[in-house]
Length: 221
Image (cartoon, rainbow, N blue to C red; front, side, top):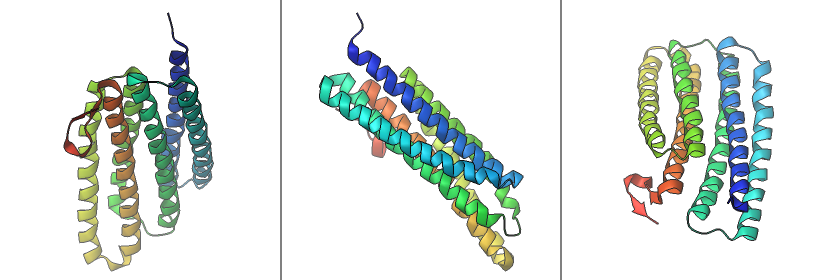
């Protein structure tokens, strides 16, 4: 017999998936705008951020009502708390995509630097992390969630290499300093997007198992 809270949790999951789709689209649009030099896509990113903000308010309100009316306990409570945290991470992802949009608009006014091409690879990995983290959430797939933690290492390593390469490039090409700093900022924002996807994966593990693996530890709750 299905409990009423099950249907409500399913609706919350659906709303989170919709919000995640908006985040993926914002990231996709900003990378296309950057490398195809299509300015109209930047406006699409800003509109998508507005939508993501609306999504966040809707999910928060739903969670508050569910907590107040259902008084959930144990696994249901862990799921709702995880959704609240995931909701915050997705909203911040929208902010990061918007930050990239603003920086990309500045970058397109400058002479490009070759290292910027790495951002395509980074964005593809990050978009995959976002999608997989949400898939793991909907399916309650802890194995998939743990794989996302490893993918974050790849994003971090790429970001560090970008920083290193551009530091050397700026020493030899002083005219490229502003463009190089733009690329560094965009790489940093992509890395932060990956961090938020990792947070979602950690929340999935907590929701399903009750284990808090943040800060490199395993804590039972």
